[in-house]
Figure 1 (cartoon, rainbow, N blue to C red):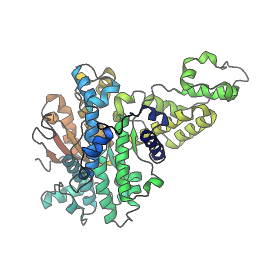
Figure 2 (figure 1 turned 90 degrees about the vertical axis):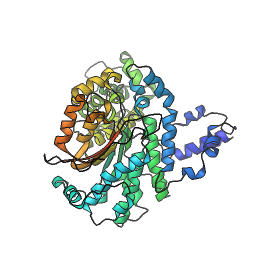
Figure 3 (figure 1 turned 135 degrees about the horizontal axis):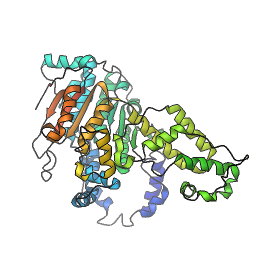
Figure 4 (figure 1 turned 180 degrees about the vertical axis):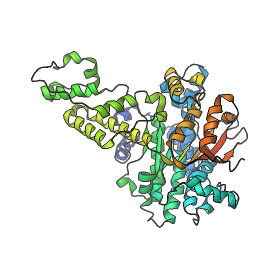
Length: 479
């Protein structure tokens, strides 16, 4: 009975959270011992104290618990992939590269990027008092920073676009939500309206791990619901997506599907997209005077080719500019002309959205990018890095550093957590030169080795810098 009730509750929640609660058939895989003494439900309720779930001024406890649980959930797979000492396949990249970011590091990065940017446009703001990790610096130095190399800083809260291109379970986005909420409230917005505005205008996230992106979406939406309990009645469209591959999709498949629809009744052709691709000889497509003329979908063709290897490359892909209105019009046309493939068209709409997010530039980009040396990269990822990011191809994190620079508006701010090897090794010399030539370092922290867990002995540097409008490079703070 409990299993049935839980399934029904998931179905009900799926109306508000369709990205999280999947098709009802997944309930068939639900374990049957959910009320046993050693069940996961009992452990969650009894082994984790109630107060540990509650957020505090110093910690987003709920999202931290979810993040750590997910990291340990995939840890067995991660150990197996890394222990194999072979090239990492696309399906294993998420497990091999994910590492949860502790809250104090998140606060340091967000407060000194998003918070700093707001203070530059609003020096009278009280936000500074709510940011204990903000590094103000000497007055003359801060004034120089606030000039922003001539940058026109955002003056309205809706202009503060934030992107995490490797968002994982959403820890960075959740704290950015908190800071943005204070910014909106300071500007006099109604508290019930603020969560929807933040989700619609400010927060953006991408990840190649679908489950992690779902958790990130859930985390920010629950944060929004805590501020406005009615927000799930009409949930806003989130800008947090899984970067999906188009490897098994082609324009020709949709063209053939349209011809099937037009040449025979639909009841005679209950065909899947795969069957149309694999068995074209079954289709009545011989060219004749009466055969329908195939439609051309150049924008869709371009979209499909751009994301063919997205499960390997994720946010590293830089789509060329496309006319989004025309692209969505093409998708509408396909949905009308090939109604059998409504679900595939829905998938294409999300891929079109991920292209939009990756084509834009943002005022603030904050990330803990994935780490993987070139020896672990599969051939697709390695060749892509070599061709598109020759200055940073030695490691996946350094490739992300370059991509993030490209994602940032001139005068915008970047917050990164990376291994500190880029500061010293000769293989990163070209990357260092680019950072020095194009950016102003606002702060750089190199913590002691045990910044995460003692067993990890992780060596890291936390880097914050502004993308300059001119070539007057500066370093404002080293810690």
